[in-house]
Amino acid sequence: MNDKSRNPPSFADLMPGVKKIEDDRINLYDHRKKPAALPKTRPQTADLNPDFASIDYRQRSEIAESQFDAGIQKKRQRKIRQGQLAIEDRLDLHGYYQNQAIAALNEFLQQALTAELRMLIVIHGKGNRSGSDAVLKPLVRHWLAQQSSVLAWCPAQPKHGGDGASYVYLRSRSSL
Image 1 (tube, one colour):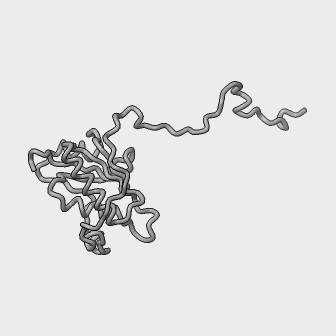
Image 2: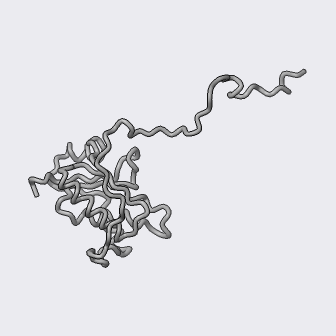
Image 3: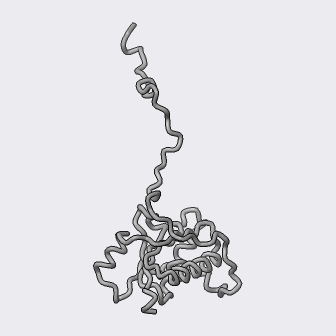
């Protein structure tokens, strides 16, 4: 028999007794302390201004990608941008409608201030599945820019969701 006509052994043949793992995903956050979870119910939107949730195309292009209060030191800004500060709580807005997202974001911010949390992450998605442009990303950034309790916000690092998430740095409750 010719050596070229034989098939080489498969990897499974070379590794007898080794069982294939069905799920090869690793949860990088298992070792971290879980923050107090927000209620999973979607908030009511009756008390919100319905005009706020709709941002026209011109306003979307004017919304800054990030914002830092003038009082934040450059070193602190760099740590926020690089995701080096411990994230104390997170909010995932995937699947929310605009009014629901703003209501959830408002409630999340109030709870974070009450718990005296400083570094948060808001996952709004990149908007890849939207019909045209991203919807929640500019809405969240527009809303954050108007909050006096928010000192800074910027896109997250790829390990935390990249452009589909935003770091949010809050004022301490004593300075409000």
